[in-house]
Length: 259
Ligand code: BJW
Ligand code: ZN
Image (cartoon, rainbow, N blue to C red; front, side, top):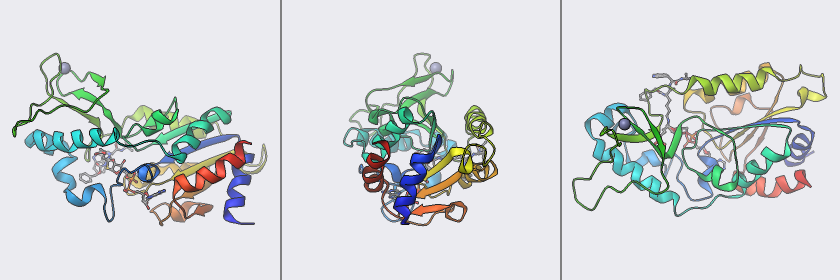
């Protein structure tokens, strides 16, 4: 049986699906991934733009980087991978989308509920009162060489509501992921692997080792599938790998599953 036929079979048999996504999911929409040739980090040192220290010392540089990425979102559309994931939410009795992506393409494809582990480009947070506010257009830094930095109504400096290096993720998110896995039926009790499937899509696993999701999935008897044209840090942990761009693959495979 081909890898693709096996994926179709596993997606049809699954009752509970958890999808763990990274920048590769949005690559076919035209958003650069982070690592590798042409990646977002290529033109920037991570420490210069994605750490709390960078924001403290050079908020204007950091804001220019994020305002440009907010603007880029207006030029792109969700691709078939985002749409398949949105449809899975309605299709499966239990479905959890866990994305590291800070773009808004899952939402725009129709996903209603998701864990955004690394925050959102389209939210700002006050560095004083901590209020989080959604925004519907890119932050306007003005045309002057010295940018007009965005301020909260309390007067505090606003920052992008994303998780930078050296910062903590929201522990409530890990609680929710843990709860999803703990509710897995024991392996073998309702068919193979208890009907639970972990899809690892478009992530290098370079940050936090994929936060232990593949380890948890294994412990609870879930099947693990990777969709990524390249090997990742998680590739050794998976049961099935499809080495193809996610939009191309899911655009072909998902219609066979939902019909
Ligand atoms: C395709 C494809 C196609 C291409 N189809 N696939 C100090 C040390 C350790 C831990 C801590 C620490 N201080 C605090 C902590 C605590 C810890 C924490 O919260 N832990 C919890 C578990 C409680 N905090 C962290 O772990 C933070 N990390 C950290 O601090 O590291 C230490 C450090 C400190 C200082 C400097 C350096 C390191 C979390 C950091 C979160 C970083 N978030 C970022 C930036 C977000 C804001 C922004 O976007 O600007 O999030 S980093 C960047 O990487 C971004 C991504 O979400 C994340 C993951 O990358 P992803 O998505 O995997 O992308 P790529 O580019 O790596 O891979 C793309 C993949 O797609 C490739 O495999 C391609 O092959 C594939 N692909 N086309 C499918 N069409
Ligand atoms: Zn404030």
